[in-house]
Amino acid sequence: MVTKPCTALHSAKVEHGYADFRARREATVWQRLNRILLVLLIIAIWLVIVSLFVPPYKKLMQSRTEIDNLLQQVNEQHTLLARQTREVSLLRTDVSYLETIARDRLDLMKEGETIFRLETARAKAKPAAPTRK
Image (cartoon, rainbow, N blue to C red; front, side):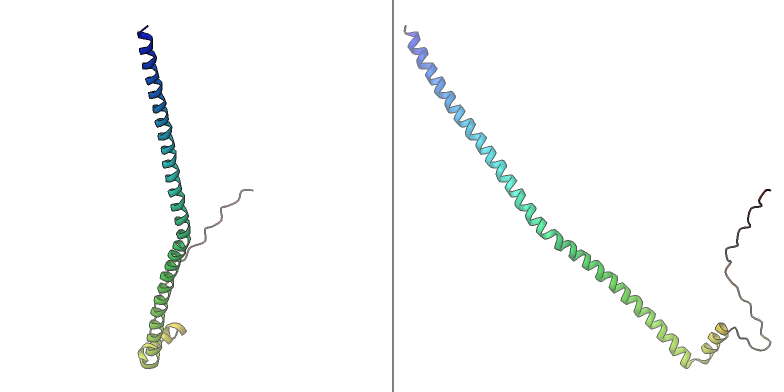
């Protein structure tokens, strides 16, 4: 009979230990769930912040690209303006340049002068294939 009270006492300790283990296990499960929830909350906040900043950033990059394109067009127009200004200046001041341009555009030539024009080869029309009757 001595062994039964000892066994009962021992089993009571085991049941108490199991309850403690179960309580700790449930606590760790809740802690894990709280951590997961916290991580998901942080990710959600980060996504909201990113979604707020991405559209203006895209618009900024698009605007920069447009500015670069416009600056390139401005540079091309400055180059064209400089070329046209130089040509106008030469036409007003340089007689030999004026003569060369006039002779070239109006197909004029001086007496005793022979002009040879080299033209680029044009695409020849392909002869039509003979049809059979």
